[in-house]
Image (tube, rainbow, N blue to C red; front, side):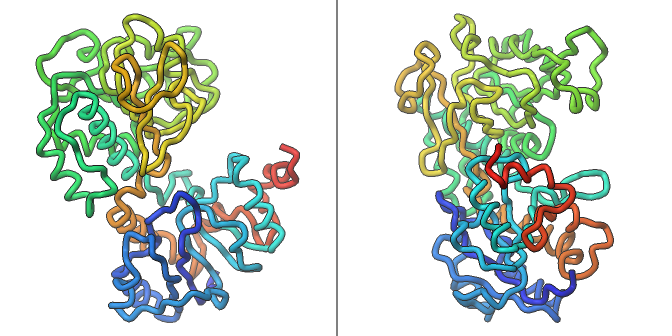
Length: 406
């Protein structure tokens, strides 16, 4: 795709606003050094984690009008009224699962003959994602879970992550915590869960095996992490096989209930398939021995595996309570019998400087050589949802979605 000679960095238009950027100011200089035959333009923005002045200080080209650019890079979905016809766009589109709220956007992409490349589908030959913010979602999600737990106990008030200058300041606040004895549970084994573990390990919390977590009492805070083999089993008693579970989740049943009875803080950082068993039902939460008081649902599958995740929360207002008796939302920390929820769905946006740094480095090293040169590894091809307004072969299944039939 070496005909893409002029690259533009968009101002984010989704609300609530996202402060992340595809490239930091320093990375823009690196871009110019590596791709010296390409032109880079940054659209001004007052909401970014990096101020316009930080770009201008490095004498980078900034201008409002990006109509001269061939490819336009953002982070979140673009306001459908802002699309420039017949351009190439790259951002997290969230249309691959036929998300209803983004149908109008994809229809406009088709109408304006736009080529759409979705970060989510930038993968290697083995299907491994090359670029993602999962680590940062896990780190901030675990931090928010700890913050909610401390607020419920009227303990040291951690500063909201988005008020921290960067990850270093966020972790510095953690060092002041004196965590009360309790059991912290994490589900998941990928980038998100590992990010959550990074945050918790900064506290030097003792890590125990799942069986020990279930069977023993402790006079200190402890932590365990569960892989799928710990929370599901085959319905017909077959030996657990992770590959089989990923492809046939409907053949499995939950074994998560024992953990509900002993955990205090639950951090959900797993990938969930709608065919998979649920983790916590509304009926589970009404049982007398249900013990979890705070759930940090980093995965944030609304109306999914955790019944109390009734909606996504926001960076500005991250917490709400769930009343297990009425099965209704309540104000956060309003009653000790409630379960406090954290379900922010754009957690990496709370540490925009750090998250953008890692993201931009991956763009420079892994993605731009294929985007702006030769796509020999078919990285860009696999992630191209539309080309000149036409759905590509791999994404033809979205046609009914575009047509408004689904």
